[in-house]
Amino acid sequence: STLNGTGAITARGGDADAVHMKNGAGGAGGRLSVPLCTQIGEVGGIQLDARGGRSVGGCTPGAAGTVFSLCGDSPQLSANNHGRSTTARTCVSTTDEYDQVPWPPLTIDVLRVIGGAMLASCQDSLSFGWNISATSEVMLQDNAQLQLRRGQAVMAG
Image (cartoon, rainbow, N blue to C red; front, side):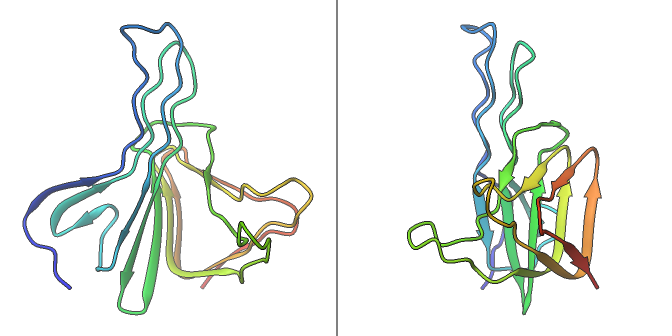
């Protein structure tokens, strides 16, 4: 598969309407899945952006979306809110929503939570969380957070 050219692929959350509202939260970013090798948010000259939307009046910016890419047999997951620190969680589902069957631990090559994003499991409070195994790299940078719950672990290496 190839992706050529320049430009952007975006799944940004909506910005709060500062003209008509005194207070408003931003919308959450979306999900991008690119079956190609990527850097942090870029494929060649094409920018990948799934940030949450801007807020107004002191409300919470939207949660970061995710960018998933597959480089050979090396899956990578990134949540990047591009400097918009937020307490809104970027959820990673760990059960089949219909049958409530737990999925196996998430095993990826690279996990990046950057730019103010907060990555978390968003299941009910009584269940155990999921484990993440990153075989190569775990990066938390620029006021980002990884929210762990009872029974959860992040393993690298």
